[in-house]
Length: 113
Image 1 (tube, rainbow, N blue to C red):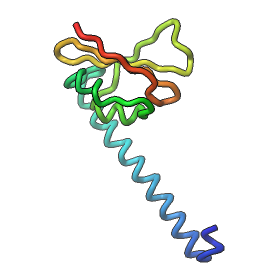
Image 2 (cartoon, rainbow, N blue to C red):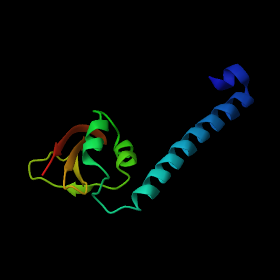
Image 3 (cartoon, rainbow, N blue to C red):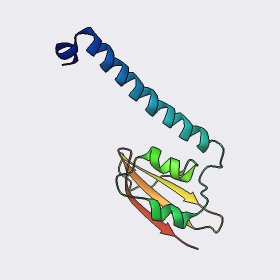
């Protein structure tokens, strides 16, 4: 379509736009992952605030950006193979358990001590 409208310049423009889009998303992913390596696994500043900011359908990368830490993997015997569960705990021992299906948040719960 770009070739029909603008010739080879259109193809170059479309390719440049695609490369910029990929670089932007890779850069964001690397920044989020770099921040998560600076905190202990499974910790979060405030479990209550995390619980309030979660929304159904969020990507795992978006949740990692909120928590700024990798979650502690929770494996249950009754969990389907396409689901993953992670747990984050704050200083007051309140926990947020998030369940993901295909990389998207489907369920979360807050547990207070």
